[in-house]
Length: 302
Image 1 (cartoon, one colour):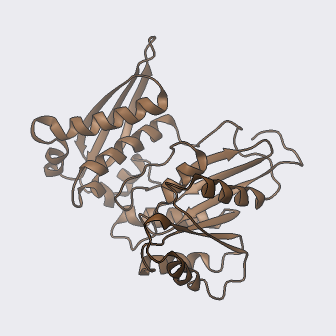
Image 2 (cartoon, rainbow, N blue to C red):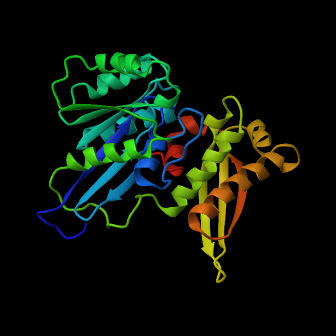
Image 3 (cartoon, rainbow, N blue to C red):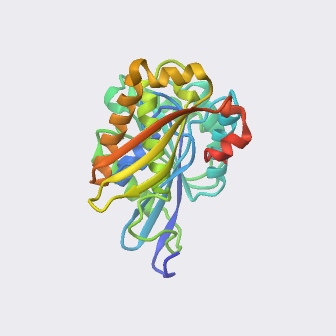
């Protein structure tokens, strides 16, 4: 921790919602940099990624959580547990909803979790730029909080296309923070190691390229990261699948699919690192890793 000061305010803010409503996009927009993976597929986020925004005297630690859903395996149970743990130990909550659609059963699961929390709740109606009836949809979501007595705010925006609205919401969150010393150094953007961050970039690109259910059977990890004297970043990573048949699908005919995943991930890494990157990828099989608690721990889901 940094030195304590009676004039500093800091705290944790959880970003929650069902899968694929734009939670990670909102987090990255809050920070002005990419710390969380995003893709059109639901359940891209699997662990509580923390992103940090600091001013001279205030610091928000955002906790991007997996989408709340009905779990089908041990990985899904872990993801829902991440949400429950985040809500138990934060100072405010941002509930993101998709204004293009009315509430679903998954939205009701989220509402049940946040309705009675004795902490400020901000309902964020996302994707207003693509919604036909945003006001009506927002009314249906806020109706799920009937009976709530805690402080509640509402805002509608597009996390991807409304930087001014995102900044205004961030100011509201900064104002709601309790008096505390900073939890992280002022220049920090995330609590992830560089290896975890790079592994998530690789997994994001794999999820974009792969079809059907295969993306959900894929995990990634970075095993080594070295820097040459000329600045080249040499990163060696693995894409983990559950079956030998999946391995062939990830590699593709003549290695084409794996090359495309690697090239897309390398481009992202080079942009954010501002260095040339050599990215070596290998595909390995860990049978049924999503149901194997030891394998989940080895892959960082614990």
